[in-house]
Length: 222
Image 1 (cartoon, rainbow, N blue to C red):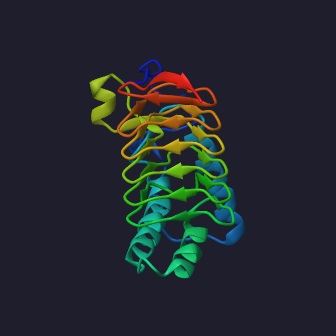
Image 2 (cartoon, rainbow, N blue to C red; image 1 turned 135 degrees about the horizontal axis):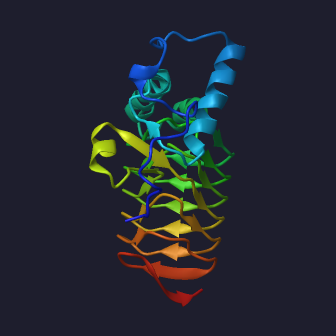
């Protein structure tokens, strides 16, 4: 399990419990300029690594938008690549030419996920993108992989009230994640590395190695 930061409330103004906010936030979309500014603030707060409330009402419209787009992506016919590409362009932060994602795909926000050119995400992959998830070029993500940026404090009272924090995941060019691989918060995987099926990656892996197991350990250089 990844280490957690001290179990203390976040700094004032970064993320405060919903009950302390001056008023509710509606899911009504603001104007484009205001919407972009609001999204930038949300992304900066989530990516900071500080504790935030999963119940924060400011997150609701972004989760709702993600769920609606996921329903559309996962309802496409397997052969309808063109429609799925268009929807993924709306859902993800970035998807480069030749990249594709097969259904059923799940994520939390979508806007933190960036896929490099020709990167391929196979069936039943889950990405909890509460912080950036960046995949380089020609990455292969096998079926049922799970990439988790979100984590919870060890303090049970903070967990019960749904405080959490997130750390980014970065996967280098030409990495291959075998079937059912789990990548935990804050991990970076170097270019050309292969992670064996079913492995749990709990810490950074250098380039050009084969790693397997739970936790994943380097077996040899490639």
